[in-house]
Image (cartoon, rainbow, N blue to C red; front, side):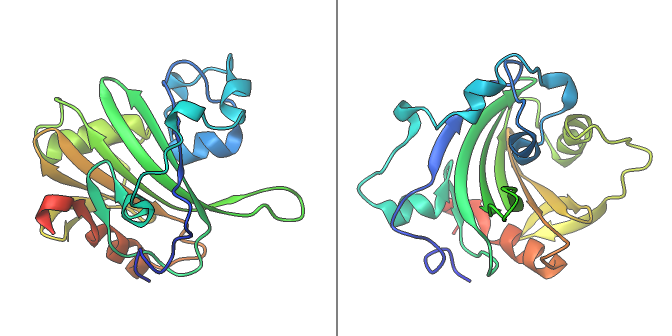
Length: 202
């Protein structure tokens, strides 16, 4: 499915999150996948509220906005994903911009995260190995046991795990894509990742 065929006429809402202030909503914590050490419960209510009005934008080209995230093109999306929301947050001087697609709510009121794409920007990201080291810590993985496979993602070097792939673009810039592997395939993951790249590289 192309990006253009999967979007409504409403651009995703944008929410700015400052890691270290609060993420107490279970679903939201899963979306941004922030390490537990970076999360407190003091302002969960604020994140449960509607997106801040100042960050909800409907630009002149809504379709173009819907297919772009932080200067990256989103070319391909798997069929059957839900509605998107945008988030901006920071951890250890690295800034993340993410778009998250959720399906639901179900009869019990629960939602499922289908797909997440992220840009990752920070001076400490100087090469693929520094990106790997950073994300190992960010995701709270054991570097000795986290099973990663070296992959090529649209011409960029990266690593893939069962439900996610991350890749290095250039010094200071990287990207990550994760998917619900209980409902989507490895091909869905890698195709989405290959189509997620800087606009000027298209």
